[in-house]
Amino acid sequence: MKKYSMLTDSPGKSLFFFALPMILGNLFQQFYSTVDSIIVGQFVGEEALAAVGASYSLTTVFIMIAIGGGIGASVITSQYLGATLYKKMKTSVFTALITFFAVSIVLGGFGLIFSRSILTALNTPGNIMEDAILYLKIYFLGLPFLFMYNILSSIFNALGNSKTPLYLLIFSSLLNIVLDLILVGGFGFGVAGAAVATVFAQGLSAVISFCLLVRTLKQYENKEGEAGKQISQSNVDEDKGEKKCRQPLYDMYMLGSMIKVAIPSMLQQSIVSIGMLLVQSVVNGFGSSVLAGYTAGMRIESICIVPMIASGNAVSTFTAQNLGAGAPERVKKGYFAAVRMVAAFAVVICVILSLFHGSIIRAFLEAGSDQAAFETGNSYLSFIAFFFVFIGLKSITDGVLRGAGDVVVFTLANLINLGIRVIAAFTLAPIIGVQGVWFAVPMGWASNYLISFIRYVSGKWSKKKLIQVEEA
Image 1: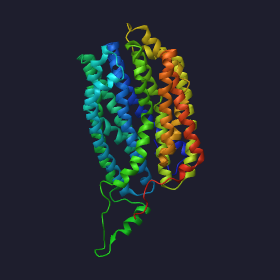
Image 2: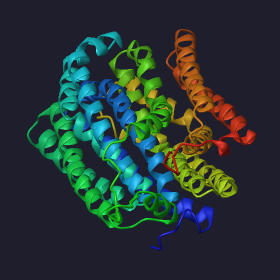
Image 3: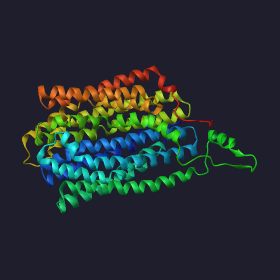
Image 4: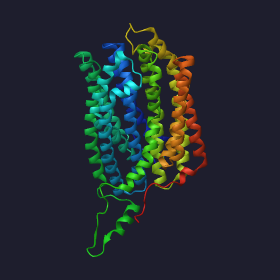
């Protein structure tokens, strides 16, 4: 397959072919999460599936924090790449890796200590509590590897290489499935086996990914663009006639720029998961059967939003590289190409879910499961099928603002999204039942999109500066 340049090739083609490996990779990631649920539901039972579901909302928040952090790092890295400042680009990569590895250790320790307290606060049913705690504790032990796996994927994407993360995701997905079948289906280790399979598969992929990244960065060892050459020339030691190596491994200024983008990116990436987590107590109150059906429905939703989120991430990288190269008008062309792309995805998703939602839900649940589980899953999928266009439009519009480093309105829009989802779920569920949670989702997505779109139309995002092109 031809490699399309985000700086010179057709915006539509370069975005699509850059996003495609990201979509396929994330689908594989969601695929083995879904297989986790299917294997646990079929081999262990409804309560075990509900236990994994009760843990899923929380674990997804932590992974989305990692993805958001990776996007914060990738925006800075992409802008340096677009400006041909390769030494600074390498420094930004190592600054991100060191920082987020430390963050992952802190978060993993937090999760280990407070797993029971969090699940209790979320009103987790007593009959699945111990299994849910066991799953979480194993998961948090391996969190640093899972965290870095996602950070490394974002860095590869920032470098314009979305194929390597795809290959690693395929590898980890297949390994995860094999381990699931062995540990859960063969040895009967239940939810513990599912957790160990996930941690080991992604952990091994993280190690391989780091080795490949080090090799990739060596390609830039003696390479510098015109902007980089001008800076290097200013560092010539006139006494010795040699160039000084002034570019450090870790840079606090770059960290500040990354944090500026990473925090709202973490919020944007995790907004769905945080919303799921906060409304989890609403669903939990309806019992483990409803929770099992809701878990199945949420797994499918997670798969359906993959092309939307990946398109937004591709737009973010596209925006960062082109703004770094001084081409804001090209960003606008890319945005309109992305609108057409997510609209097409939304139509396909709607048709598939409308026709096959019943068969999809039955794949998750054993034949003897409570009827409430089937009805809940079917109800959720048949409703949400018509609204994925909103999260697609939200994602690509947020992608432009994030790639430009325009974070104030971007953050506000995502906070409003979260607030609407939580308030609507808690208000409507006592009145109309668990279906109240369904209505809250598109309301949040649509509000987020409208706020971000107004900012996009203003054009103020194109004037933001995140990187230093010249040294002081």
